[in-house]
Length: 229
Length: 268
Image 1 (cartoon, rainbow over the protein chains, first blue to last red):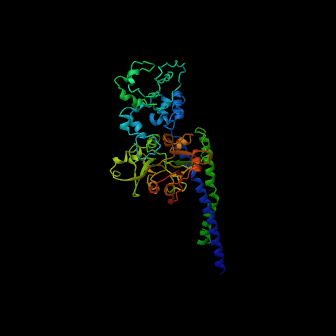
Image 2 (image 1 turned 90 degrees about the horizontal axis):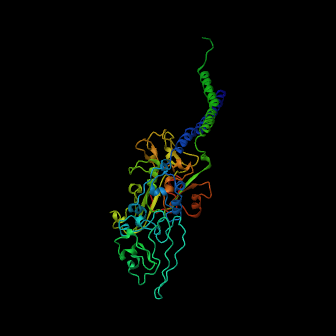
Image 3 (image 1 turned 60 degrees about the horizontal axis):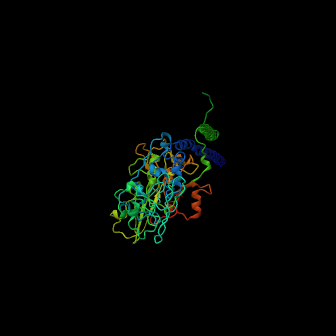
């Protein structure tokens, strides 16, 4: 039996050494794996970008950027509407300006699945097929409180005096440049003032004159854009 | 030829000792090679941005309460990552879930949601339905911590980076599509031109430059949130702290890293 015992010892030694070999080989191979992965990750990380992010637009379009940042659209990135702009940063090629109601409707059309607090409208009824930008500046879309970009300060004109039974009309707001975003709300009560054009057509009694591009519009349409007090 | 007889046993013993000896001697070799690789990789990194993957561990959150299903994320992703515009290829997508009064759960995702969604009454499927609830669920690669896709790859072409993102080495991938099948979320597709597996990378080429993934930047309502899980003040950590979150298909054991504020009961 001496031979058998020697044999067992020999087998045991071979097995132990074989185990050492396997452990060493496995550890080596496993740790070897990331070598090509690091190369691959570096290659992928080095790919170019298409979207520049809105903060990049601030570098050149500061006034627009400030106006937009204070508006209700501040979470809508510039490139959501203007498209990927990384190339534009280099080439300065003009970016798309889409003022179609279809673009606005992508977010603002009424859908039952949308959260109730999100502003949604029936596109046909509300806009009547017109470009939303006619009343809502996309960089400051709120009509009630439009954000003015860099207003030019001027001294306001004195308040006009009125006969006793008629309540005082507040003075017109100082002119701001560039054009205000959205039609200005009506600053006075509409009591007894159903005929807008009576005062505003000729600009009498201190009322602001109806602008040229409103030609052909009647009293009924004024209230559609110029919200009441 | 000498007289001494060499037995078979002797040869075998010699052979075995030789093999084991060589194995023991050569086992440090892979470690040596790896060390040399690292050194050369460091030298190559002089040109690329000083981004150290080991310093970050990225995470993603989706606030389904905010999603309006506009699909700007899907479009931005396709433009950013040059994903083919055909409907069957997408790295991220938006699903609409409708729960009827009877408790039925219906889902649609027209063209991955890239053009938004039409009103429910325009789809015959929903026309006569009494709707209890309806919401949008944006989806993307979950960059799982226990990824089935990495496990099944026969050539180890797909792997997890140190910062927790799963990438595909397009030079190693053989296009067998095993990972497409293995992913329980349907996040992968075979690219029609390169014929290799492709998927959302959380815009690895952007996040390694300090930018946000394109879909996160595009979302107009802040439904997609991205950040470093290691940074306690990152937007993702903040949301995880302030809200109760859940993941898709937790029973699969994949340990996803995209956290949802709310998921409808029958979400797929």
